[in-house]
Length: 295
Image (cartoon, rainbow, N blue to C red; front, side):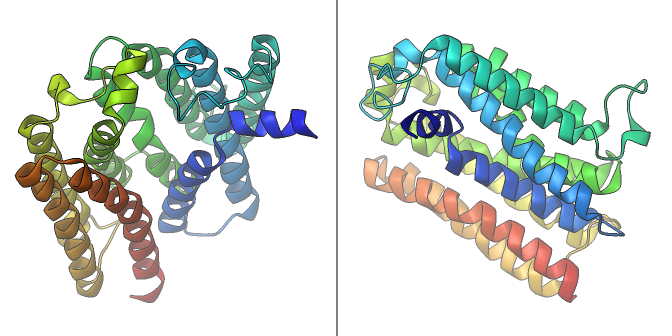
């Protein structure tokens, strides 16, 4: 039983569940006729693809994880799993996940081979494993690169529902893309010592000063602006005036926490921004979904 528990830890269950929640919320925003099979393929396939990416991330960072207290208890640094076991498990669940995503709207596949959902899942996984993970040791450009696969789930869910990558899907992608900068900055600030100990370059500018806080403010504002655009413009993705107000308040709240980090430049403010980022994303998505069905 312990062996299966260790395999489960490779998935990073909470992170994978958060990713799936984003995809599921976007599907609910986009469908015209609800397809339970497609929805389940999205949930299970998305979870497995994310879990696979997390597994390969831990494989590549096994030696670095040993250096950080937070990650030293993971199954690979502790020796509970071998590299071979982790690779086989991660590869198999990734393959199964892509297979399930490929069953969503296969008629819209590229060259008769991959559905749009499967393609976006593959792109997300490869960017996370082959770009974001190694770049963390090189430059903070990894945050920009990592924000792309991190934003794909919100896009992927909408594409799975509509089989269309248009302005509405792009808007959802942009919201989650900009959200990740304050999110990453707050985490990098709080874990700065551990990241530096492991050789990860995760904090813009490399120091706890106003520079990363300014980036957090700018991206929080951009996120807020994009998140209310559907109220004004996009016909396929609408917001009522009630949800517009709620989404705007959430964005202002998030931006305020970034401003507090700029003013105080301390760990307390960074931790509050981090917690706010965890709350903002699902709350925003829930408001969008409720708006779709009530207004």
